[in-house]
Picture 1 (cartoon, helix red, strand yellow):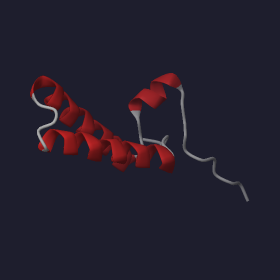
Picture 2: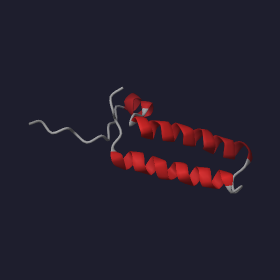
Picture 3: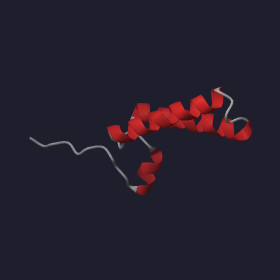
Picture 4: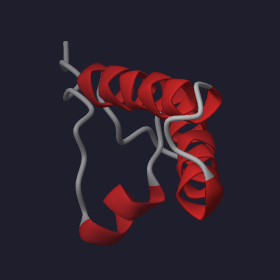
Length: 70
């Protein structure tokens, strides 16, 4: 897997994960929506840790900074 996520994307996803988990564990969001947010949080966390998003690949996106050639 080639990295296709930049640091900004990774940080934004981790912040979203923290928000979703907080909403779920404080009881603000419950039921099916709460469970869906937790599943989405796991996906966001995994893609952030791997710096790879399969959806970016499908659409040909790449937010990873270009490497400088020396």
